[in-house]
Image 1 (tube, rainbow, N blue to C red):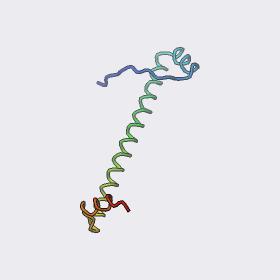
Image 2: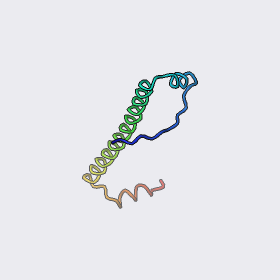
Image 3: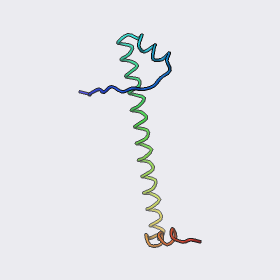
Image 4: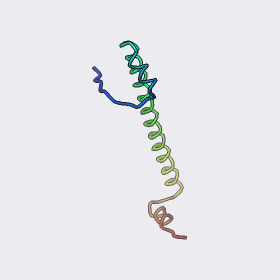
Length: 81
């Protein structure tokens, strides 16, 4: 069973009035759409983070294959010139 929790969001006055005047069924549909929208946003963010990590791992792997060591990298990063 999915537990539900109440949240508060700010919307334009006419949207709030329309929601208050909606039937229970319509409100349920609106709530479901908002939940899907927010969940989709979370999934997209998680996918972006996973892709970034994968890209960083690939860059690290390629750099190591080409001879970059942690010591060389540190020397490059600490080079003031």
